[in-house]
Structures are given as structure tokens and as C-alpha cells.
Length: 87
Image 1 (tube, helix red, strand yellow):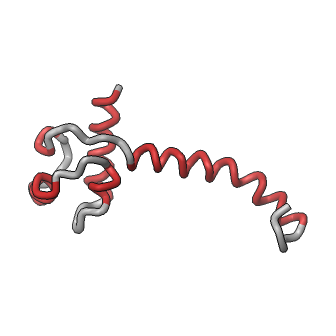
Image 2 (cartoon, one colour):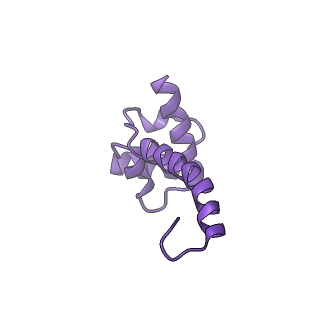
């Protein structure tokens, strides 16, 4: 049981914790994914996103995520392209 928690709370947390652990480890793997691909080759990116990414030249998806103005849609397009390249 979790310190200071009730039996019911402890049981709920114990059942949910493995799913969160799996999700967190997946996110960490994605953030560390190497992006060795030209931005112009990624389909679905706007010219503005291509410009921002070419200027910053992020090495990983996590670094691309921290670039100001990069949208979640752009990150999804980058992730899809990086996964295809890795496969």
C-alpha cells in the first residue's frame, strides 16, 4: 500500500501504475529518438515548421518538442517519419 493512503486507493494505484510506467517509458524512447532526416522530406509540415526546424536543427524528437512554435501536429508528423525510417 501507498503511505498514508487507504486500502482502496492503494489497490487502484497498484492496478494503474504499470500502465503509466509503460506509457512514460514509451514517451522517453520517443523523445530520445534520433532525427537524422531532412525536414523538407517530412510530409505534412508547413513551411513555417520546416523553417523553424531547419534553423534549430534538433537532434532528437525531445529537442524538436522544445522549439518555440512547433505544433503537436508537426511533432506527430516528425514522429511518424522517424518511426518509418527506423523500421
